[in-house]
Length: 127
Image (cartoon, rainbow, N blue to C red; front, side, top):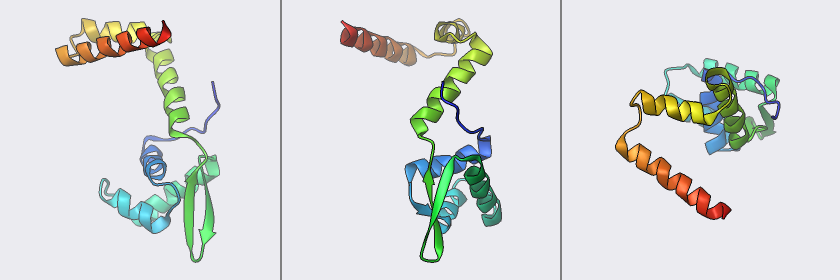
């Protein structure tokens, strides 16, 4: 498993913006986050600096503004965090998680059908 920086829930919201809009400057990141959060511009700047220190982002100066670029791929982050979640709660097995959702009636009929279709498609691809 890849070693990635520890990213807090709040920092993850910043990363989501950078992943969707790489090479965004500070003002652009603040504008985008202001639509979904109540954080002050100073708080957002602090989170950007933390992500740089952690190695999740790097930045460069373009004229008078800083532009941010992810060092961590979103797909890599999701893969590592998904495995970590499975390990913590379901002994590392996806089967246990799905079974738990099925037993607790947490999946709708449509979701079950969608899962079935996905599994059938994967099975066809492997054959």
